[in-house]
Length: 201
Image 1: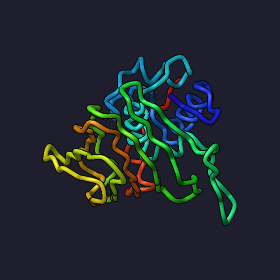
Image 2: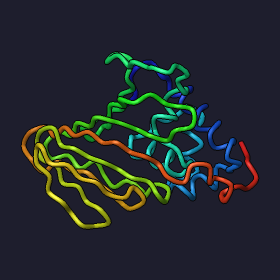
Image 3: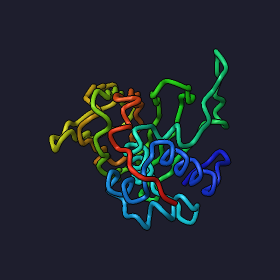
């Protein structure tokens, strides 16, 4: 699922580190993410490869982005990400997400390029923190964007904005690949204290 050299063990360690930094138990993270406790535990131990949807739900429950789980923050004023250096997540169902933005220390922002194969439904993503925003632009193909159960048909050249703190899903009902760009700004940064309990594991 992952490219650019990050191992499952390294990913698991980062997820565990983010969880512990927020004072969350495995049980609480499972509850917040809607992922089973056993799956969370296996992902943290590097024993199980999460789908993109599972990884996104874990990131959302931690109040962060998938990018931050995949990379250390950049410290340079200017950061160039060569194509070969960009993190790519491939989902078994037939779509991939390429992360185009670097991770910055105090900024929760993610810019990505997604390719969804014909007839593929990427699934429903959980609401992000209150105040989150997402901006989407379709480069080619067609996309069915569904926000809180309401579908919107987008074609090449169309763009959309929607609050990120709602249920949203992406599907390609067409016969060719759909490629779209998505910029996500997460709200609620620094509000993790409301989730604190006794950490474990």
